[in-house]
Length: 386
Image 1 (cartoon, one colour):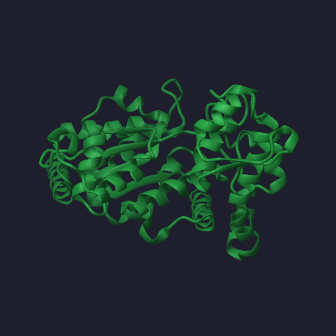
Image 2 (tube, helix red, strand yellow):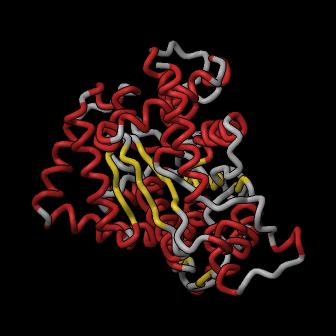
Image 3 (spheres, helix red, strand yellow):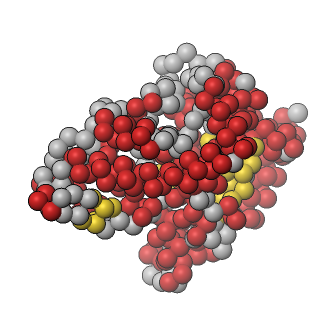
């Protein structure tokens, strides 16, 4: 049994070496004095703009120079209603990746949601949530031409002979404390009382990266530790081509001191099918201290959602208070806000208007499409479990 498992892992590793780009054969433009073509430089700028962190930039440049359609992996646990970071930010990031020529594989992690006790571990409910997520992205404008949605349960079952030897090998090569450091990916901490299933989860997510033949892992900063585990695993198996980690920023909750949004606290986040009045109430109640930029969630929404979506941010106000103004950069907004020239009330009004413009097509879809309407009705009836 042990020999068979090892042989399968080695075979898969060998196969992936042939489909990936070697990071040692082609020197980067900076290290070897070579110039990237304008097209590759443009693709690099687009892809790099997604990540708050990139491990490693030189590897990303080399990948884009040598591979026309790199595979980018993203994934999610279907668990309750979708907040705006999962919705709009994912649309922005996926559309950037596809515009740069990437093939995006979105892993609908239904088995993972069950392992993590989401929706009470009920796979039927989890399936409904996954379908609801896809409806939202479609309505919000995700470019699906180069996007492949894959249900983890279906893919793993159909290729079990490839998947489980990988999981077993990753588990065998890592000590328990190293795996425990990854439980943040599930929204847990090392001090939580974890089930055995939640110990298995990081090994499986690490395996996903190789199973999907991903060149780029495009996930949030909260998933960084398991992505680094995947790169460490490459060292263990002596694989040269490591997955590139492109970690996007995590939006905070709307209330003071909330590091992240919470589905259990409706005021902490804008949900993708929130009505206009709900959006307005949540933004009015949001933490937005005058003249303070750092830790201001309203400014974060503008920086990471509004500006990437519209390429501008407009404030409407009476002439006596400075009149209407359209900003083209976050630096300009931050400078005027910090000086007091831009008032929190005016900023919030502009934020409300922009958010409602983005969300209106999603609202319309869930009102006019019978299937989408039924999915949302079911979702709202479910109790979200942690």
